[in-house]
Structures are given as structure tokens and as C-alpha cells.
Length: 398
Image (cartoon, rainbow, N blue to C red):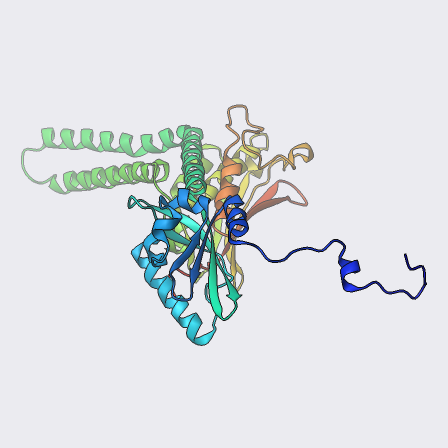
């Protein structure tokens, strides 16, 4: 062993034991088959050269029977066309649109069943030839789990809306009782006028009474329709919506509840708010839930001091802010950390779902739901929604 201080080891000594970097075909196949994800190797024309065991199980083909065939045999027609176009463009221009970039495509099993996969393609130079290696992961179970999670969230959202309606039941009953009582009274009045009328001199009074019956019946029908629209089970559907109109649609319900609890409800909505991409019913669910919570927080406050403010304005070029401010007791310090946690509630009969679901809806819309305690009294909950939603490029789009 050389002990000179200026001794510099040679390349082989630096590397330690000699490593053979050449793999035999059998060794290469063993490495491919050890992978849990599907691996397919193709030539520059898209013909299959190798397929590992995981890919065989995924697509139902044996490597020997698929060798030499085009890769489109395991892709659905749309993605196969897009893949061919991308690869042709890459070979001509060198522009990377899918090489080295993972993407989701629809694969096709031997039996014709189509299923989602995550596909990542890499390039390898083997001598003068070009090879493309596709790493494929079956997303079937992941997609099923995501759909189940979405279904459960929609069910919880529906349950939360029903809970909100249940909490407002007393106000609804009182509000509906007014037009229904008016209908009954006007009907009785018409009957008396008709009984007393020998000629047609009292016809204008009868007509006015009938008109009022129609007005009050329409009012009751509108209340019932708003309740049905808000409480019905439905799939989420996002579209460009006018927040001013969204809020206006639930104001009758909010006013019902505020009147029933002797609360002064004030609304201030900025004009010309931009459209937002949202599910109108879900945004209404958030606002109405905040209104309910705000009214509940003022239960122990003297009636003359009960006031709830709903405001909406353009915070900046990219965001709209909606606030619900009460003059209640504020959020206790010991519940601040758990306020948005499911099934935790300060209400005696509450489910503890309202704020948790509301925050999940806000997050799903690319927005934010939070709060702060006011300096003097009560708290302010605010919902921030983006005015623009960045959409991912559709698959197959250049």
C-alpha cells in the first residue's frame, strides 16, 4: 500500500470494486419485471419492443404476442391519435410536449375495457437507434376512491343544507303562515261579498280580493320553491355566475330568519361585480350557513343590539370578498383551532358540519373561508372567491 501523502488513487481504485455496466437481455428483463408499474419500450415508430410483467397483467397481453405491434393497440382511439401526433411532432422538431412529462390518458385492455392511467415517457439512445420507455400506472382504484370521496362530500353537503333548513323551520313556518292566512281571509271576504251581492256594484271589491289571493299564493309558492331549490340533492355544477344574483336569491330566506330572531339584517353589495366560476347553490349554502351562525351568536344579545351585515365587493382584480358580520359573543379562544373541524360544534343541537363543509366548498372553488373577531363585539366570517379559474389544458389539446 502506497503511503505517500501526494498519492492520487487511479480511477478503478476510486470506484472500489469493478462494476460491470453491461446488462444481458435476461438481466434487463429481470429489472423490468421487478417494477410494480407497467413498463413498455417502443422504437421511434411506436412499435412495441418490450413489455414487463406488470404491463402484461395491466393490459391482458403477453409480451411475445404484442411485440412488433403499434402502441395504439393499448390506447383508446382519441389518445392514440393524439399520441401519434405528439410523437411525429417530436421526431420532426424536437419539441417536447409529452416526452419527460407525466399525463393522464385512457388505456384499453385486451378485452376492450377502457381505464385511466398515468403515462410518463422517456427517451433513450441505444447506439444509433432511439427508444422510448413508457412508465404506466393504473389509476382505476385511485379514481374510484376520488369519486367515492366526492360522493360522500356531496352527501354531507346535502345533510348540512337539510340541517340549515331544519334550524330555520320556525322562521319558515311563521313566514309561510302569513301569506296562507291572507289567502284564507281574502277567500272568506270574497265569499261574503258574493253572498251579499245581488248585482254587480261590488265587483271591483271582489276583483281586488281575488288579486290579493293570487299575490299571496304566489308569495307562498316562491318561499316553498326557494326552500326546495336550496335543500334538494343535486350534483355540483360550476358555471359563470353573478354573485349579486346568487346572494339576492337567498335574501328572502335570510330575512325570514332575521325577522324571526328580531335581528336587523343589512346588505351592501357592490355593483358590477365580475362573474365567478362557481356552483351557485353551494355558494348560497356557505352564505346562509354563516347567516344562521351569526344570528345564533346573538341569542343572548339584547334585541336592539342585534345586527347582521352581509357585504360583497371586489377586493382586487382577481378576487371577490363576501363578509358576514355579527355583533354576538365572538368565537371563543378555546374553539378557534377546532372551529372548522367536522362534528365539533358549540350548538346544543348542531351537527358540526356546517363550517367544515363550507370551508371544503370554498377550497374546492379555489377560494378561502376564514374569520376574525371584531374589535368591539362579534365576529366577521369572510369568503374569498377568485374571479378567474385556471383550467388545465384538455387532454389532446396542442
